[in-house]
Image (cartoon, rainbow over all chains, first blue to last red; front, side, top):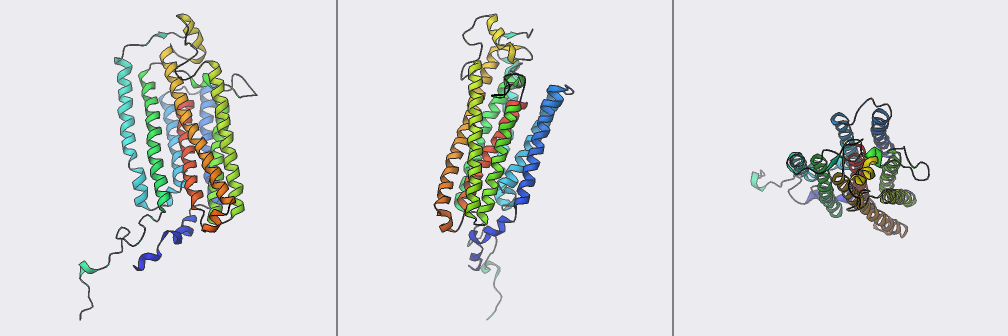
Length: 125
Length: 244
């Protein structure tokens, strides 16, 4: 029973240490920089200078940058990084099913591309 | 009398042995997290279906060609710029939301009010931009179950869709694009709208001194979690609809 002092209201101030104003703006600039890199690739390298073509490589870069941004939002803005590790596991482990679902459905889409009766296509030009 | 306690009688002190909150989180906050996990599944299902459709079609409309306008500035030739502004607005409103939460930790009512007002303004700007984007696409002929080629015959369909494709032209994939774009951005916009309403409610409660009297601004944190989630979803929607 002596553990009772360790309640939520007490820990409120302990939580605050995770993010001060400086930390918040630092995360903002990380997110801004990552978005700027995405735009540099999309508008600069792909659209304007045409150094890179749309395809697997560029898409992989976009997805990696997106996941990094998602990490920063969830970990710092949503404060998940500073919660108890058992809570972090509880809310994140279920996304294993989403990874499985992505693999499953993209395989299915690939199958449909080859097996479904073809839709009418017009050649461009 | 022996003072040693047998192992079975020892009081356990682990986080899950009772007497304290194992996660150190308030009930409502845990439930908000669980709701958001469920909501993430809904959005994942939408986006995974979108991915399936793209894999199932040999051709797809080119986002660079569909999203080209900046309302009031340029009608054509500026791909991605307008959605870039929208993305910036939403990230910015997420930052002002964390600043409101941070001010809440310090029990500073005036700062909470200030940052909540900026957050609400950001949300309204975002929904407004999305309304403009929808109107623009609707005028171009895209809508639920409808694309610029709908109602036309033969090669007229091809000519109507030609501006939106880089590779082969397909009526079906343009139709799927329209359906999925309006469904997914619509569902996201609905979330933003709900978020704005929640933000306005907690702003009123702050002005009403509800949290001041309660001694905790925890409600701002809970609404903040929802607001960041909306931003998080947009990060993915932006990547898969506008970049990939």
